[in-house]
Length: 133
Image (tube, rainbow, N blue to C red; front, side, top):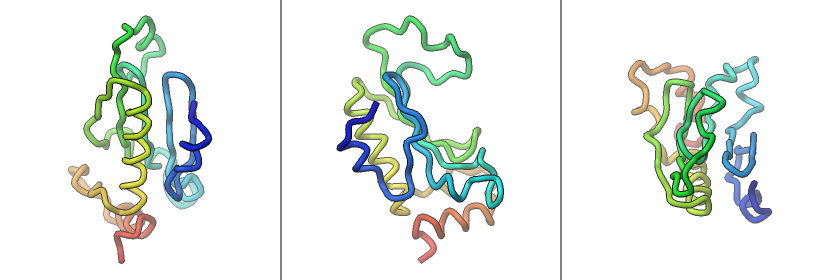
């Protein structure tokens, strides 16, 4: 869950997609990545999870008490930043909000994350984040 102050500090364009005790998902501009303009699978998302990020539902059961918190920005299912690891939820939430702010401000060079850039899509991200100016 996020505190009211954390929700209020969300950078422009970011929405809380999901929040619970062990996971936070922030979505960037779901109004744009709605299937009409751009594929929803390409919606930039910041994932904060406790333990390993896994597709298997049982993957994070029985975590040790010192399991790290992981923050990752995904541009597409297979295109992401390197995960950041944190020792507690509070610093991980701070890192997730900072990563979202850097992205929204156009400070993150997401083009470097692509091996095969998709220029139209990346040009639109540049426009949305102010990098095209």
